[in-house]
Image (cartoon, rainbow, N blue to C red; front, top):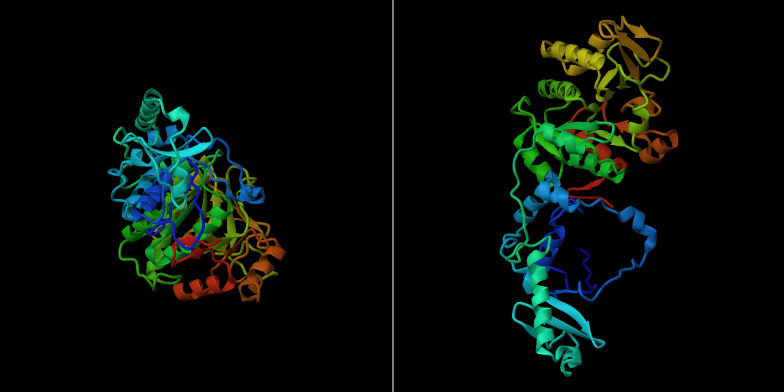
Length: 460
């Protein structure tokens, strides 16, 4: 379906545009319904008249292409289509089932003249916006035959009834959003061809940072990500934003809005959710890139991370001193790491989860003490360590490509984005700062922000 309209002072409709996932269904019908309901524009169907379309500016085509769901996807039922249906209903499309789209006027061409046909009432429209004189002329010869006219009306009606996007009553078919989506069902439809997913975990206090993170991944055309919500509010918010989100039943309750940062008891409970989820996904046969929402992505790191072979866990280093080894005790950052779904990794991650369950600290010390030994007893060189029982290798990532929040003082630079791009950063972690508000302010002020909280849309 292609929709076109003239620009001008008159708006297209009175509605508020929902944050649809474009190319996944419902959006076009929502737009048509709003235009019809608002009564600001004359809406007509030109399918019988327009056979070819040429885009006016082909230079931007590559940036605007959106992968669309095919008919079979919609018939089978996809979470994107269901979410768009839910968004349409929430944003006022209560008449989606009831509006008769077959009543929309049809534009046809006959004997060099354009006519508007109302197929439901079997008559030719003799009025056109701003061009009344055109329709005061006599009916063209090809329409003078009652038999021909009846055939045309009957054909249009048949098309309305058999259209792939309409029911026999002319109303658009939508589906009720079924809450909630399971982890298993989302993995099957979001993982890439290598069975790899990007996982993040977020609570409601970090919903805006979550959306900035999502917007950045979408700009990089990364679609194989999943969101685990720590609370019901985050789940509902994520659904309304069209995110592939699932509820984690093991997530802690009573998460503080402003007091759940590094060093707090709340933070300790929340971090342990991540390793449990990663282990669960690995057992289901999927590779996982775990990324906190405060990790800004400049480029897609997956091509590089995928080069690390099986039985290797690639993790960010939290060491900030430029002259010291990056695998020193407790310098493994559990907010950004890549894990393969293989026996050694699954076994080692199981040990991490069990260690963290009995620890009064966050999961981060459990990662290092379990995989590298207490005090770094199993360190190899200055950027690796080996877990002896499983023979899993932990590779600490190059800080120039994967810098933490204290390395080289990047966050203190006048132009953070320029400094990071010059250095060749793939990501930059917004850590080594205490407090949600300070973290948020630093990222917004730096310009590493991709979400408009007022419109709930990604920045262009």
